[in-house]
Length: 545
Image (cartoon, rainbow, N blue to C red; front, side, top):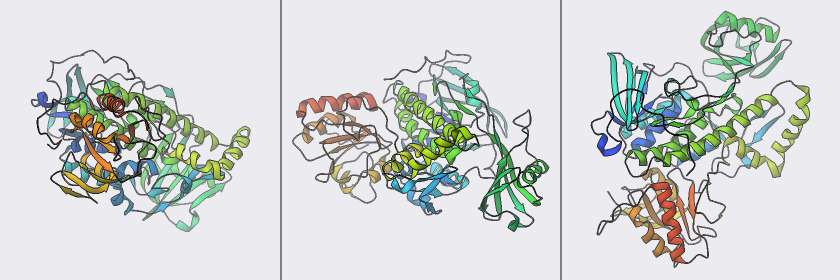
């Protein structure tokens, strides 16, 4: 597996019990810090895998403002594999294009996905739905709990917190920092955050105008700059460049200061009756040096910050959480070695680097540098051309995400998201599955996506070929982590079997002409790599708990 830097040595504190069954004396198997999209999604993933999870949030109540208003196709693909996409899609409209450069929009309809659009939904509503789901799964959410210090050792963490009832100490095997761009976890774990500082700043204001007719929705250009107006229920969101950023980038934005910038950009007075939320953000781009240090991990904005191009932040956070959740669950339950978490670093650190590259490029193209005009024109053509519109949109939205797949055969699905394959029958890891019939733990009909949504486990998909029996037998020792299912005839192109990770990506495909014994050996290697050592055989075991 790819290497990450060695874990940090213990700083203070006594040694803690190991994670999993031996950590019963602790408060949780995993502490998640931060109740934004990354923290909530990660907590849901862990709880689905029956890992004791506590979620800490410093704010006593959800925010009264909304940072963003979209979920893209990549997030919807991931959330669909947990049975959440349909509920979210009922909350808002879908649009088949999205902003790319000043001259062009991305044609999302050209993407190869079940969700070729962006969903208009407030981030606050996404967080409400994830919070409800987390509580349903048994996550313990502690609001008003601020992390103040960490004691780390090889076996776990002591988290010192300030709570409404005074200081408290929580113990856990692992801690995940999902606490935003100014992450306390990242600072306490001494994880470097290299990158480029903000050079340009934008002012954002959710306001009620005295006369809303004075600023039409969309782009408004004046002698001093541009103002972008987005309609919202009961107010309007206004964005404009900060012509005179303060020395202290964290200095609060005041209404008089925003009024001045608004009037300067438009060259006229546009009175604001009142403000709901005012903030300033920059185009800084930073990526944590490592996403894991010992038993501390980072996800979401705690791991990477970037220019706001494409409003991709919440989507990258969900992507991180889905990648980390099943891996951390296997490790916390003692079913896989800690080295499995090295793949979280290698996969999502590389994805973070691409995220920073893409958003920085878009931010540069959004500027007024005339030397970049030919580049803008070229990309505008590529964004609209039939042959390139789809691949470009897939790269920007993350639909093109593909992870390394050792032990594979070179099949085009390897590392990519596996489509919703129709199933015939199979042995399930847990209970019933929507859109299918289950009898005594056996799936009679159904599809891959509902199977992943119900179990949160891996899946071995098999064509009914001569190799199926050998492959099913090879996977039997992993039946507590991987559900085996036979697909409908011809559903797997050019391969008799696919091993699907819990996040929906293909971890391995069987060579189409390999002898059954050789294919079974390859499958065992892939199962060991992604799901840990085989369980001890139990006579008459069905794979059901």
